Length: 254
Ligand SMILES: [Zn+2]
Image 1 (cartoon, rainbow, N blue to C red):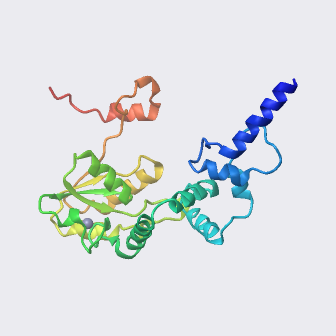
Image 2 (cartoon, rainbow, N blue to C red):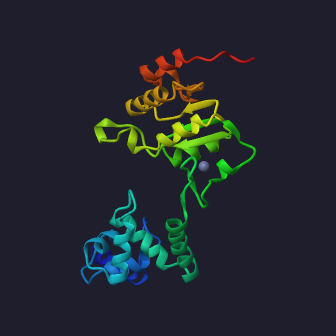
């Protein structure tokens, strides 16, 4: 028993001198020594807890953590990890990081034609000569444009609404970029409008409203197909999606 106690004391002293590698943060060695007190601990400490609840060693660090928590999904624990990571980088890396955020805010704007993000007045898609200018795909936001572009299956133009009609949230037709879509369609070059909004009640409402507003024009108005996801079994598909898949079936190409 006495031998075990001596062995435990020796191991504890060795741990105190060497520190632990934290399973969460690679700065664990520093944090362990920082968090460790004269009171002996029986297990490796949770390195992030004392630093979150206790006073920060630097007001500038605390300020950086506060600013990082403005990002969606970033709490104080994650923000602290980001701030400590940045502190370990070279000044050039951190300055480049900060400059890119400043440039993002100052120089990125919306395309004057389709409202996609752009570094110039007209985005690269609207300015491209090799795009099909008779097709316009209507999407809710810029993220949708990037998703569709990533497929490589579409070569027309876009129109970003910047939202969808949602009476419950107080968003009406005048709150989205709908008037400019009507104006573009009335110019005559566009032959097909593809509605690629989310398959929700708000998305369907917006689809219906747009189709009504464009009904006086000689346009083909289509909605992207909705159905079973690639790789999913039918038994895992909800009945609404499966029903729409049957209604929206396409001829099998041999
Ligand atoms: Zn554009």
